[in-house]
Image (cartoon, rainbow, N blue to C red; front, side):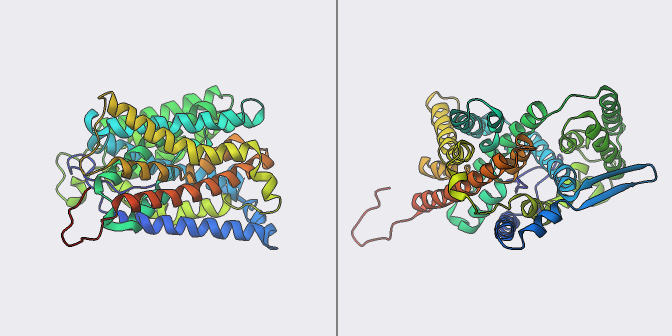
Length: 413
């Protein structure tokens, strides 16, 4: 998932998002453009320049305390921590005052997301049951909401708002699952002392919250130190974003006099981060990570890794989302949102098969050091996501098409 538009909210908590779906649509288009540029660049005679850009060394620090990494790792470990901070703030908002705030409202998309995580993982595992490539089982489990909501935004008013909320909530739950997967399955051996340091910093941030500190600067400064501590623990540093989001206050100061003071710090930060993540961080991530060459494409796409990712997205995702939704509805555990048909849910389930930002990120973690498997995963991701997007659009257009009125004929909807 990527930054989304809130369907509503209360100013007493995190409040409604002022940005509508139009930015999400433009963000999806920009993300697609960056991905196309990456593929064309990597496949061109200038492809070695892209690799040189990825490996460009950059150092940050002062004096003896200096951290040097290639540009690719600064983006994947640093900028993506900001992405995960925004994800954490969005999940927090949805839990407190959004589509996850009540059991009745979130039941159907939660069941759908559970199926959308489990079934693609099973499909991938069927092709890669053992060996080093088995670690990529989570790659097709995530939905890229920037692309999905971008497509819904382009389709315009023909898409019911309730369907957008459904797909957004599925992606939110997807994100929770993806963060847990990264924290549990992609963590190296833990270093005890930095872990204690990180726990102490987090406790200090929670104390700031309890003391009523509503200025964002102490939280962001503490978050930067927390990122460095978590990096040294062996846990992937992008999880810092989600941890920091837990500490940032979600309610405004009770004695706030200005409009800004009446807005919760979490709301203010989410609003400020949204355009930076949508229009800068995610396209940069795509540019540096999505590039694959078409050389040997037939062999790559026929590999178990590529087939597992491709069919996980193209078959597993829609089957899991739609199947679990139908099962939960039949068992009386969830209700279909008002104004939404099962044909529309079917189309949204295909859009759930667009796996990109989070899937690329997980692929990089799963196949760190295995360049061949990573290229195969990227082939499966690009082809599977493109086909899922096309099928999703076709299903939604067909499901929302209104028959032309004919004289003397009745609608038989």
